[in-house]
Amino acid sequence: MINQQPNGLYLLCFTELWERFGFYTVQTILILYMSKGLLFSDHRAYLLYGTFSALLYLTPVLGGFVADRYIGFQRSIILGGLLFVLSYLLCALPGQAAFFWGLTFLIIGNGFLKPNVSSIVGELYEKDVLVKSYWTLLIETFQN
Image (cartoon, rainbow, N blue to C red; front, side, top):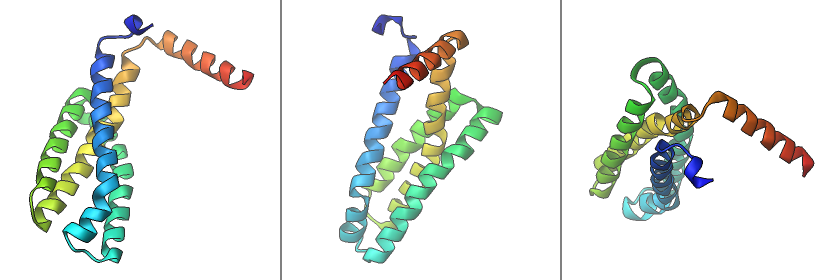
C-alpha cells in the first residue's frame, strides 16, 4: 500500500508534520511566554492569544485565494515555509518587537502554507481514484 503512493506525498507529509509540530508547540507555550517572559497582564496575554488563534484560521482563506489566482500552490508552500522559519527565529530573539514581528510572519506563513499542502495532495491523485476513495469511505461510514 505504501509503495502505491505518489512520490510527492512523502515530502508533503513531512512538511505538514513539522508545520503541525511548530503550531502545537507555539499554541502550548504562547500564553506562558507572554505572561511570564514578556510580563504581559493576563488580560492582554489572553486577548493576544485569541486574536492570534483567530487569524491563524482566517489567513488560509486568503492564502489559498492568492495561491490559486496568482502564485501557485508550490510557490505558496515555499513562501509559507520560509516565513515560518523567519517567524520562529524572530520569536527566539528577546524583546516585544521581535515577538510581534515573529507572530505576524507566522500568521502570514500559515496562510500560505496550510491550505496549499492539501491542494497539492489532491492534485497528486487521479480524479477517478479520488471519487472511488470517497465512495468507499462513505459506504464504510454507513456500515459502521
